[in-house]
Image 1 (cartoon, rainbow, N blue to C red):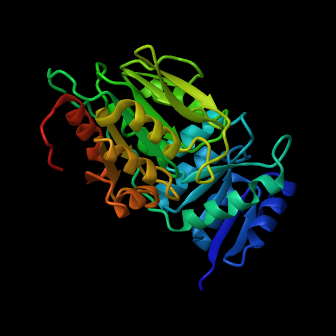
Image 2 (image 1 turned 90 degrees about the vertical axis):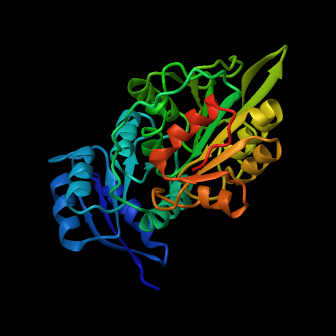
Length: 345
């Protein structure tokens, strides 16, 4: 089997050694170069044409953001960003928006090499098969009618490639969307707030990181807090967010299956769910719950998914009412929110 060829770029000699040794420990991965600054990263990537570039955000000569833009413009390939725990969270969001496939937190302080080893290897392997070069779509307004809403909530799940996809969905929603939106993006604590902040800057809706005990209100987008499951509770005629530290589900926390199950129980046929790009199968069982309760499920199609894992799992279980390209999903959601009619894809 052909090995995955990887270039590692980090200005710390210690971190280069750690990352390269970790990746090389997997028999499917071959390190073809390790460089110490951004200019070297660009030139070596152009020369050696790796399958994946593992790129530090903070580097001399050219920083990671500049390198990412150059690489994606001139010779698109999957890029995994390396980040300090929380210091670089805003830059991580920007890199994912630009087109990086994913990111991995560097070992240090509260994060050990053992904590990230499996994650790093898994993400590099997934990145090697990712669809690259889509870029951010033009964000255009979706007009909606004056019909009384018959839907009660929108739930969106995503993983690898999700932040970029969300930047092409959430900002398209109209300012007067008549339902709440809950976003479950696989991402660690301290990074989901930066994602919410970035979406807030781009959107007409209010976007925030979910908080324990807050009431769920129409016209607000709640980004599930990293490191916690976002549960939904009905009490005295209102709905509330409950954050828990229950064990990871599908290897992740937050998990879409957990939130989707609660949403199906609480909102029943009033749910519209969308499962976007991502590794694994999280959200598939929850999508089945939603459809069983009478809700509607949309899955992103293979052609526009960075990683066709989560939406594929939904489609494989016959749990998708619609399989759509990313650019069509916001309009379909708004159409479903506003109309009781059966909509055709």
